[in-house]
Image 1 (cartoon, rainbow, N blue to C red):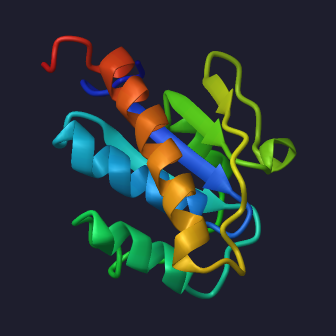
Image 2 (cartoon, one colour):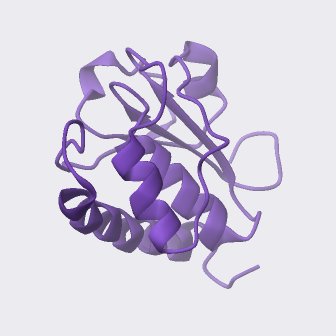
Amino acid sequence: MGDHDKPSVLFVCVHNAGRSQMAAAWLRHLSGGRIEVRSAGSAPADSLNPAVVEAMAEVGVDITGQRPRVLTPEAVEASDVCVTMGCGDACPFFPGKRYLDWDLPDPAGRGVEAVRPIRDEIRRRVEALVRELVPDGA
């Protein structure tokens, strides 16, 4: 880890309106503040995908206050782990950072029924990441 006392994770997708927002919300929710969370997009949308907001609300996670953000080299540099979701080539590379690429369907243009399985798969992956980054629940 860098010069801070807790691990940090950056989730990146193209529009920062769906997958990366769900992943960031799950990580905030499941880590209990033990992991610093960021999300960004290489070409951020104007607002979150409404089906994503609804799917997360169904499981008790409110993301209505989140907004898509632009991906910056500083956000990557400040993170220990960078998780890309379909835009890995747009993510700046810094030696010593850990990069993961999660191949997940894009929820853009899909209804909440199609978003639910994406949401649930993201939760499974985030749970594994939490166990890895905070192994003893410290």
